[in-house]
Image 1 (tube, helix red, strand yellow):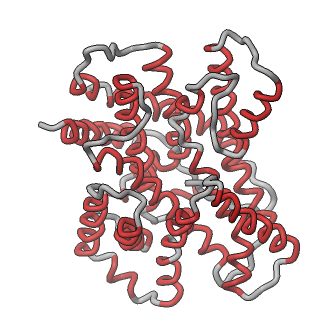
Image 2 (cartoon, helix red, strand yellow; image 1 turned 60 degrees about the vertical axis):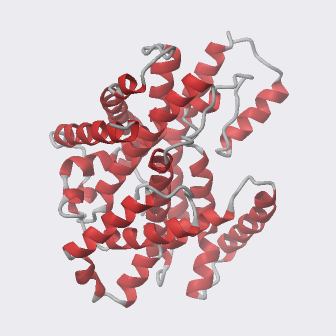
Length: 382
């Protein structure tokens, strides 16, 4: 059995256990309970797949010294790339639906995004700062360097902190996706002005500044503008809902569920991840799911929906767990190690990540969800 097949088998068994475990937990909000969208459960699958990807990247890092994807397995690399692509499509779907042929309430939208995303991110960065200071003996570098490093974390670029080169690895580098999320949110008034032919005043003006600033940012490779295609692909099911509603019942048929599974499976084997062909295949699969196809009941599971509820925590804190286990506590000897033996630790890692994510969801995320600003509807960030 190849390493990839071993990993997939252990992952599927782990997810079966987690699904059963989370069915026992009463954590779904009233809003989530009343939704029939398969997207909630999809988010649970996507976030844990990213954990699986970085679990294997950690092995690569510990055995070769390089934090990078696999040179030999497209599937392992796509266990990170495909979920990120679909997460961006989810964001595009949710927010295009809120502005297309609608009257957006911009203060409420931006407040909702800030309080939904930033508290947990601030917590994670605080942990990164503490670990970095601890690992460097609290011997501070210059204030200038600290300021530069801190700024990079504020804008989701990640960096060393206090000169500690492993700081970015503590989060598994996932913070990079948040800069695209925020760019998309801040560009929404421009998008809304174009599609609705409305003038949104100062919100449009500020949004235009952000969009214009993205051009030099792209030249400096701070932003890769083709990533915006992922969000745009999420617009497709909204357009179908508004203009071709008769298609929805057809797309819920089992044959389209099989098609979505086949497209995602093929996308997972493509060596050129984040490529246009991969985006096209995934956009079809995503539209089928977003319009209500639950893939033969898989995405109607309460356990997976509960995992979807904590998916933002899973996504942000799994790097902390991986780093703590394998770099700080050193629970596994990587010298002369066998990757098959290492893979057997995946269930433990997933249970720990999901358990801690439940705590951060209840202790950090949910308090802000339960106390939204006046008129704000909370929406999952990923």
